[in-house]
Length: 302
Image (tube, rainbow, N blue to C red; front, side, top):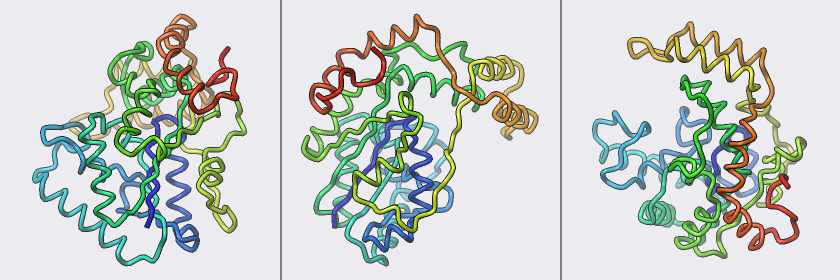
């Protein structure tokens, strides 16, 4: 079998794509493509496989609290292998934006490769979607307000977490060293310049999946306006998301109110936008010249 691994990046419509693939997994299987369910809690995001590739001393919010880490990895591996064994297919399709954002060392990226080969893959192709770095930061800020942070504005460029998400040249080179440049396929997430852009349509077209007889889904993670984000930021300063280790229902109802009444897009200050454009200009230019020479700019901003 061949394997296709969609590695994100974050804030490029990954949730919508994963929900579509999960909802239509039976139809995909009829086309010879297995999109594993893994378990009911991941909702089409195969991030637990990424956890199995963490360095031994790596701890974050995904694996913190798992009492027997080694036993967890063995159980997950066996469960995944059993799901593969009972299906008849030609192509294994996996998706998680956390493959890109959490597997940040060469050894971790290579562990994922070895893991997929252990499932019987003969060839592995990597697909990653790239977005304008400033738009990534804006979308990340909207999400941060939803989950309870009280940041006044998005983090500055070159902060470690932002650099992982926004330095596209760095990402492409790291995954190309592990899988071969001929097996790494960057795509552009163009929703910011073209509202009719659909990552589902683009992805399915690129890997030759027919959308005939598939069930569409609504877009996930709709955005919140600048005013809505400011209201959430002020609210988050006063009321925390968790109370006695339980989600605070009062806060959740307020978030729902903001989501329903302040739909739109968050826009950062023009000065911060300029900082992002300047910080990642060399990276974006390299990606454009290497993979998209027909475009005037990698993204829509002049």
